[in-house]
Amino acid sequence: MRQPSFWEVARRPKWIAGLLIAMLTAAAFAFAMQWQLSRTFNTVGVSVEEAAARPLADLIAPNTPIDKPVYDRLATFTATIDPQNSHIIGGRLQLEPDGSTRDGYWLITNSLVDDASLTLAVGFSEDLAAAQAAQQKLESIEISAVGYIEPSEPVKRSSDADFDSVALGQLINVYSQTPIASYPAYVILQSGIESDLEPITIGIRQQEIEINWLTAFYAVEWAFFALAAFYLWWRLVMDQRAREANDQGLQAPN
Image (cartoon, rainbow, N blue to C red; front, side, top):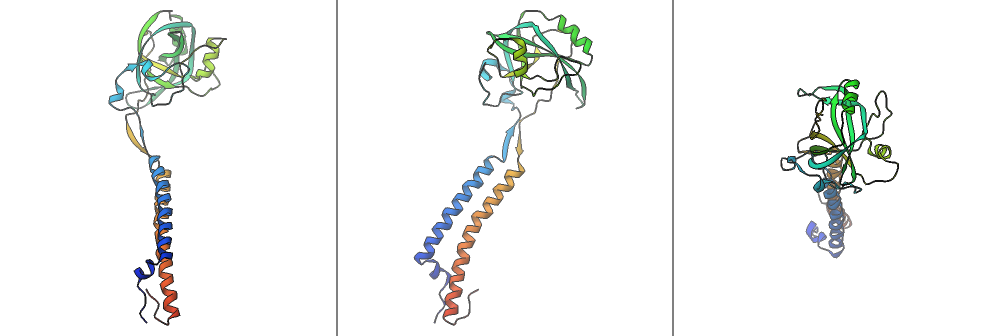
């Protein structure tokens, strides 16, 4: 008696149904793989198009959570300085052209943009007394400024300065005892206020693709599972051929 071929067994309704199940299973695994791949390659940093200064209102708004990439973006705005709410921030690092850093202090001040609070980082100094002297010279004036939008920082315990972090949740309670509108980020000034302090320099990351190797591994794993679904179907069909050959006394198929 002739041994049935692989395709003769595979075309039977039972194994066609099995193939459909394998295809559905593989499709589910492929969807999981695609989801992991979408999280594997992330665009970070500021592109050439995003490097140009934009109006602050186009990027962030008072009392509105940030739901788009705006950090390290340059913003232009007009604000009124609030020198009564200026502070010295310790534990700051000033980036040098050669990539090294220096420890020091920032002078920050509250400002009002259309009656909403916006914290401004004015300048850097290695010397606490120099930062305090610049603080005394702040005036309640209106400025047209340009600066980098930066995220709020976690609260840290202060040492010799007023604060050791630009924690907006903490600062807004110092600025006012009653609730006021406030921006969800602060700005490192590049122009707008003249002072004896050094301009603050930070590392602005250029746009690049960042790979999450953990999710890449998971994507490969899901792809393996998808192929395994078809392999399992093929193996079951081959086992069926082997059983029929054994029942008929024929040589088991390879």
